[in-house]
Image 1 (cartoon, rainbow over the protein chains, first blue to last red):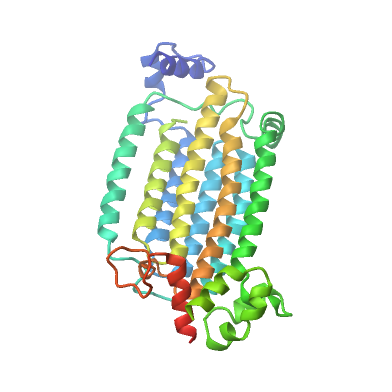
Image 2: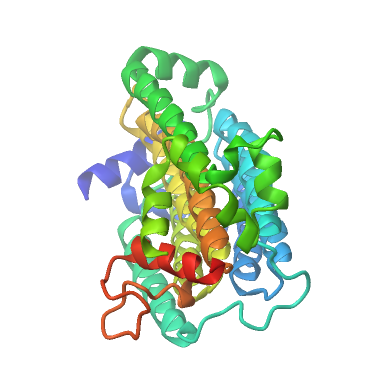
Length: 244
Length: 129
């Protein structure tokens, strides 16, 4: 408690206000929010609403598009928190690639365009109960714990590209390199998971999988068991032949 | 800025993602909800890093570095997850999680054993035969 009080006081000493913690808490009050707080609140409401629509809409493609709004709103929140590098990484990776990947997944699994009545499973009321209970508990605990804590957004930005780069390559080099190995493993794993018996065809495997592999049909799985075994992916093929 | 704003928003987004994971039926929608939860954690990390870098003279910027790592791991996770979903869809013709019940106990499975992969391949072979 003394740490939090000292933090609030130190964060406020630059503004030449009172140094007592109660006075510092009073000058920050909820009833006089700053412009950054108002902007954060409005963008946060938009983000939360878009997140709610994402998990409740019955149109699958619309869910992906509302996810874009949610992730973009979070990028704006990062900008408001002076973490600009994280914000642009968020825009590049999430909005740029992850959502596109999800849309590709929706298309490749022949997701219904338009309303699908079975988007939610039967236990949605149990899920709603659990989610509301978790939200209530978390919000109560968080508000109670950080009631007297303020972020000092003045001064140099805490997350500019120079600061983030220096920190990343001075203190976090080894995890960074390990992460590159993990990304390589994920790349290889995704390729191995998605190429199956039809990888020996002359066309690129992604296109052949997208066009012909979406529905299991009789000639596809019956014509190529020998090549499938030849291609070192014999475990599933062998199981399949054994089952046959 | 009051620290409660980003913390509360993060908690609400996390619970939204939790609802999506529990209530959705399509596997890709479940992956979207997992992305929501990961983003909630990222917002928490960034907010607390900005607070601590000014309050406690933390020079490591561990929150933002961990946020970058989380974003990279989320990208890898979504790639692997979509590959798995596509493989299941190729084998079973559906990406409906409620129908993938081969490893459930007390279920009238077509395979005699409880191994999901073997039952899956058996289902594909029977569909092909």
